[in-house]
Image (cartoon, rainbow, N blue to C red; front, side):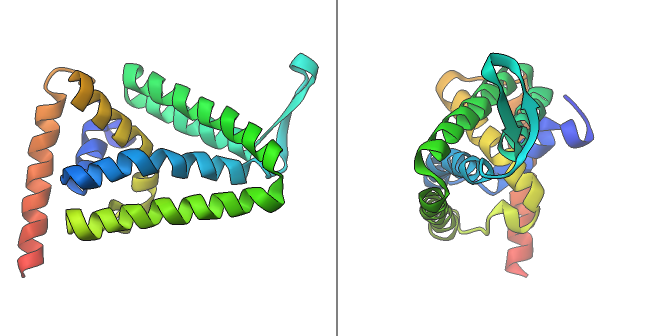
Length: 190
């Protein structure tokens, strides 16, 4: 269990406190990664930062370094689930780079805009209709954006396979979420 920026329990509890409704969680499972993927498509049109002469040469731009940052951060939070998340980040980068090359900028930005609007709308509906609580991004924008892909992956791994980064993780997180939700309900009723 890390501290500060690498305190997975704290991050997961913060994000989980805003996602206790199963329909809202399911909406996020389907919409968070497409937001990440489509962002990478747009970022792929940024200028090259680094040229790699291997395999005939290729350029790395903001899209690659964005995906790499997420990948390294997730591995630093949890070796196993973080490695899976890192793999997904790099697969998203590879796929988004290929799609961006096929679409070209004039079509790609329209695909990105449509994807972002659809996915964000779905998530806001999830929060407004099912969760009945504002999204986490209104309270902590950077943490919500950074943790969202990893949160939904951990949620799936826990639900489907009972995965925990360490024994007691899920129980500790649930206690923290309950405290946060009780404080939120008390503020809401004032």
